[in-house]
Amino acid sequence: LLCHMCYDRFFLFFFFNDTATTEIYTLSLHDALPISTDRAESIDRIYADVQRRCRYLGLFEGMGGILPVSASEVFETGFGDCKGLGTLLISMLRAADIEAHPALLRTRSAGPLDVRAPNMAQFNHFIVWADDGQDGMFLDATVDRCPAGRVPDADTLSPVLLLDPASLGLVEIDPASWSGGELRIEVTRSLDH
Image 1 (cartoon, rainbow, N blue to C red):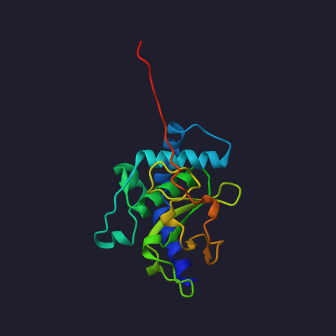
Image 2: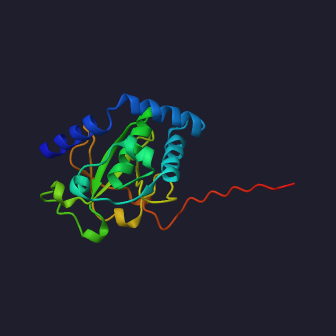
């Protein structure tokens, strides 16, 4: 629990507390996304915007496997690893006044989490939890064209550590949110006269 609190404060302080960056995201949100009064729809639009703007690229040199690059760097370069993309997504959601927190998990390929003594070394992936006004939804910013609230099978084996000060311990991803390969596809067509 102490490790969980320290990690959350670390992320909150260093990666989600940049007012200049928040202003950039706020302008970006208003320029790129229609405003919606429906929270779930807003989450879906912001999530789709991050997926459209940025690509997953795992760079694990030095502390890169542990510490995320800043949200502003991911925003400017258009790429990041799971931590960087998640940090950008959380920053953009928070700029839209939507509560969002990091969630750490152990992917299916790494085997089950030892829930008797969870520790940071067991987690190998970073996703996002966002408050949709109901039970919340998990978002994996590394997956292209995945609808909001759906997660790939690789994310669903073990419980996740939600880094939310109001959350204590591990939480389960709702089985209803598991993806069976559902993708978001946007088709735009124009006719020339």
